[in-house]
Image 1 (cartoon, helix red, strand yellow):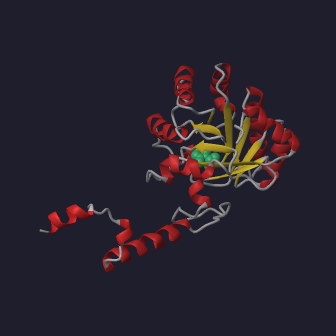
Image 2 (spheres, rainbow, N blue to C red; image 1 turned 90 degrees about the horizontal axis):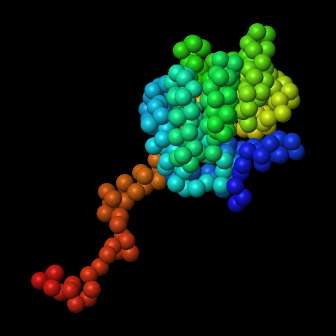
Image 3 (cartoon, rainbow, N blue to C red; image 1 turned 135 degrees about the horizontal axis):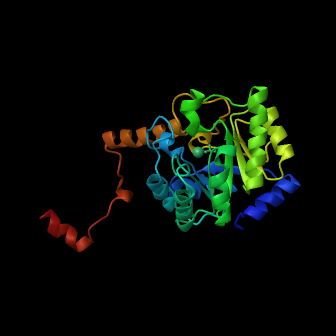
Amino acid sequence: LERVTIPVLQQWKDKGRRVVMTTAYDAVAARIADPIVDIILVGDSVGNVCLGFDNTLPVSVAMMNHHLEAVARTRPHALLVADMPFLSFHVGSEDTIRNAGGFLQRGADAVKLEGGAKRIEMVRALVDCEIPVMGHLGLTPQSVNVMGGFKVQGRTTDTALRLLDDAHCLQEAGCFALVLEGIPAELAARATECLTIPTIGIGAGPDCSGQVLVFHDVLGLTEGHRPKFVRAYANGFQLFQEALSRWAADIHKGAFPGSEECYRLPDQLRHAVAN
Ligand code: KIV
Ligand code: NA
């Protein structure tokens, strides 16, 4: 498979070829997803999806490094994007450059960060250091405390216009693509039409340049409340649980392991052990 690069993504937008992106937090998921998808995101959603946190705020650069390294070792053909976690791009541009540069040194091709006009200084600092940046607007999970929960954004004239303005600012600052999350489909369509860079939607309707869903959501591995933009293409949770329970039942019956699943002594030693 030919490696996906940033110029290739731009060509795809120009000719209307849709982009497929999912998350991976470890080598197993990366190997499953890589032949299928164009972009692999080591998302800070690792915090709630895999690490048991309620939201993404506790995720640190060290945690992201650990998961990114596991994914990068699989050398995916997909563009590998690392999410900048909360507080890793807020304090100052030196700190931001070191955190993002560390991701590139660990094998990421680009970084993603949440926010619009307020984060432009940091976006510019990264782009100036040849670190490609993907923007992320709308329902930005790191703003959960300000939003008062995970709520659809951009539903008023004010917030819709601000989102379009933020999108232009990010493009202007040099972002190579934007994730649009949890916004009305019409607003995402408008942003996609106005911008030259690709948009990748999640809960943002069908008219983005591409779509992203969390790996565990597509495969039905996540329990509990499922937002309406998630379409699970497998009931992975049940599938895996049923497989495990058949194995457990075989153990209880004495049917696992079978003779073909055992190591054997050589014939001449079998006697010695028996006696
Ligand atoms: O962390 C994540 O998984 C994300 C995607 C859902 C865009 O930011
Ligand atoms: Na994220």
